[in-house]
Image 1 (cartoon, rainbow, N blue to C red):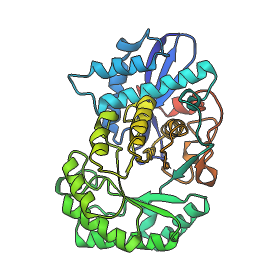
Image 2: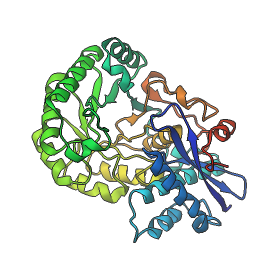
Image 3: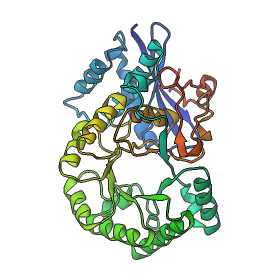
Image 4: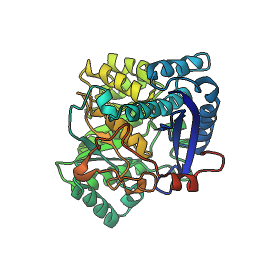
Length: 385
């Protein structure tokens, strides 16, 4: 069997705040097709990375898709002078997931069976409330109760408002501060959510790496006290481990980071310097199924739990779940909603997350079949096939 074509798919969706999902199709000369996912956080990044996928046809067409480790390093080392993180590992991730899908289909086995076999029967999840519903008490109560009633025992949200006239994901990164008004708003929301959810639900806070050191410390301490939060995620931007260490030394809450780290090498200083209580690599960004397994194994030696960031499309969620089926130090897997029906247009068989757990079918590869009619009808012009 040989790789015959790599195809980037950008497919419009109303179920994601990003507007589209970014899938990778790897075709073979024997008719077995594998699917991966990348889905970055901006349309600009999606298109930039999709262009790299196309270019890699020159490098990978004719390769044996069963040589997954070989292909991983062939792509990785091809970018060694340009930089082997970021876009490089996004590209590797999408292709790698697709190759594992092909391998499973060729052997008639689920991917988790190829990774050593399952350690558990299902995957414990945490999820998200819709952020826009949290600004009104009536909709907040309805949303939080719906999550709890669905069987989920943990959820995550970002309570911090953007400054007036600013974008949360650009301007606020520059200064790293938060007004007292914004702090009070976030604390009030988090405390109300804790009241509605009750004491037995785990509540995680996502700071999205927006804050400077004193602001992150102040906000975390406030939410520890008023909402009894269970972790504080990405308190500072990912570029400075020294800043992260300063925050960690001044707060009591568990610190979680990792969705913007790439490959096992970027997790080494986190583990060696005891900078996090949980790590959360993203299977579609950190290096694929191959690399997520290695990162998890490395963290196991430090007894650090792994809780993958998996909050975009259906392949993201399922690929992360296959690895976590085999990982002793697994904690929880992220999903973007307690109701995953938004994926049903993209796949022929709905995901089963009943009782707050993901139940993987014992089917070959990822166990997913893409709805090609919907994919073709909603593909962005020029991306798909």
